Structure formats: structure tokens, C-alpha cells
Image (cartoon, rainbow, N blue to C red; front, side, top):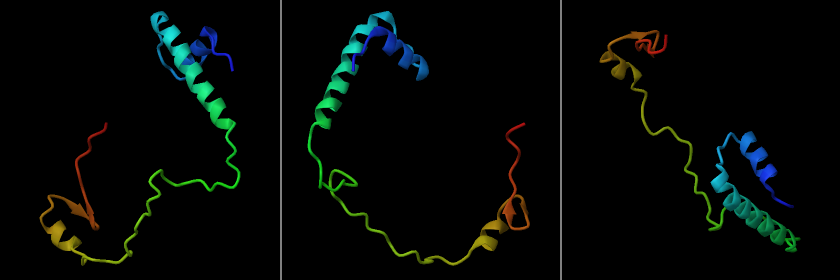
Length: 95
């Protein structure tokens, strides 16, 4: 894919990025390098290779979903400045 100034300006406008004329040449070079790398990676035969969930091949250990504390809502709401029907009331901050 050919990256030129018009393409970079169009993509920058869509992404709401400001790219100055002095940065245009280096941006074109960077995008060209990235797209060349992607093209090179497309040539690799990855058939039969299972995708990894992370590069470290780590396992996510999940704890059991068990209740570890008792319900203390009434105790906490005793010291609250304002409570109504089991909810904490707070001052309005948005008009």
C-alpha cells in the first residue's frame, strides 16, 4: 500500500489528529514501515497454530465466588449523614 501525504492527512482528519507539515514526512515513513511489516507478517504460514491469549502463556487463576463477609449495611448506614430506604444520599454535584 502506498502511503502519501494525502492519505496521511485524510487519516489524521478522521482520527482528529493534528499533523504539522514538518512532521508529515516522518509520519509517512513510519506508516510505510508499519504497513511493510504487516505485509511481511501476512506471508507467514500460521495454519494449525492456535492463537495465544497472552504472550506469556499464563493461566488466569480464578478464586471461588464465595461470600467472605457478613452484611454490615445497617451498621455502616448508622454513621451516614443521610440514608433513605437503604441507600446513601449524597448532595447533588451536577446541575
